[in-house]
Image 1 (tube, rainbow, N blue to C red):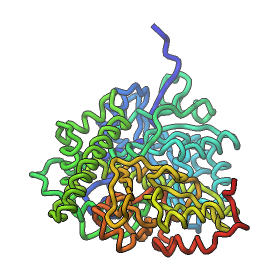
Image 2: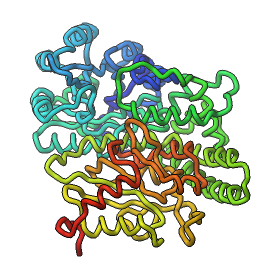
Image 3: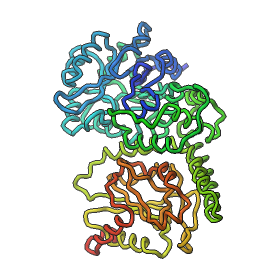
Length: 540
């Protein structure tokens, strides 16, 4: 038998005590911040090999107190602390505290430096949670330098954040000195114990925490992903909404509203909940998604499946994506045939919408992940990057010629990337189907799947997107305050089989690109007029 030489604990997870949701769309849908009972947190952690268990609820120890008294647990919380007199705030994971410590920290949370001094003077182990996530106003370099001075331990492996989002914290600690820890940051009772902190063997919680203070610790286990966020939302819906009666028919407009609000308000921590959404909308989307991905599971059975040791977030997403791509390809064929025979286009639109349902939960999650990545980009002294999205570039028409001119000559002050399903683009999207465009003889355009759009990763620093005809409107993001501004010419819209509704579902690349780019043809023309041989960045 191999002797045990290491100790583990998931140092960042939540319970029902973190109940109050701060996102408006989440409150409207009846989804709490977390819905996992403390006893289940404990059971999952132990099942996954954690030697010690703690709960880090937001500004409360109520959940952790339910586990108090067990020799392998300790009280903790995720403290929200602000820089005094400034709008910036951070989350500090405070471990092994007492109820009196909790009261003191909450009373002084308006000054993070005072809190850090208290923790240090009382030998309380603490860690700066997700250091590059903006809890309130974005942190500046000055704030981060100060945080590195007062918090020697940083969370460098957060299980809900993608590798690219965790990497800056890991590099910062490696460069400036310090200790990195890890935790799942689980809010849904799915991934507890899949990300953890490992130390030398410890006889009890006190020794385990002492190892961390001494710098003998490392974050281990899984990192985050867009699909993990999507599945967490499903698990929250299952736990909080249950199966309270038969789900109502799925309303496409409610789905569009949900997705758009997550896209535009996904990181907003204040504000009133929308009035056009209700818990039944989330319940019907969950049930329709389960049916669409051909999983013969009830909601509770899906939750149990996601908790299995063999479960893979990537595998479940892959299944949903393949079902979506197959259904979208078939729906495109039926829609084109219906349009050619003057059939029922309203029914065709619903057919297209239904084909997107398997992929819908993943689109806003991928978009939010992309926006978080963009926040880490610092390109103040470099040219602005712009993406031009077009299709059918193999044909002989004005858009092809114009884009070729822009790429050949370049545009002063800008770096331009052309994206589409054709071969002669800078970034190529795979298509599930190709469609012959009426009124454009010989012109075929590709139809990319929703995940291909939402996971398209433009070069870091790309901030604007211009969509030029003849891109199918169904493959374009819908214009909204925090998303791409993409419009198509009237001729393209008339001749296409796709609908504005489907356009709203697809949402675009999801990299946080702004809505400041000029509309469609006008935007392309604007860049074309500024292209000249003297600014040729792309000449061979």
